[in-house]
Image (cartoon, rainbow, N blue to C red; front, top):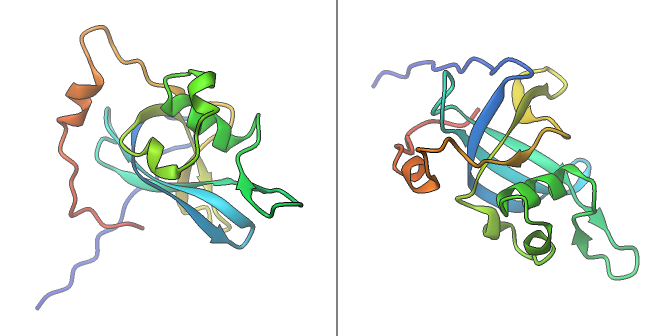
Length: 150
């Protein structure tokens, strides 16, 4: 059996990308609880490329419950996933609620080794598409399930 090497090129910093949230979950990392997203680029030169992104969650000192604070990257993601509707976003309670949603933002390069992409805080917004395009049409794009993670 032959094993091949498959490397992914990073998406350059500052590229605007339309991404689908393939999976969302609460994770615990080096910096405490986080909202972890598995994102897939849906359109353009980087269509099909996947990357993970994380948003810090705040922990309530009294209840020890994690939450998404206003004016954070996690808040931007939840608002964007709710088509920019803050009232709907305020009802968020489970990361699974944002799965399958399409959002957009600008890429950044993250990690100590600068070897992974992320979405830049301050650029994440609802994706409204072109006039002739609907979220249903984006859903029809292949998922490329056999793509490997970094």
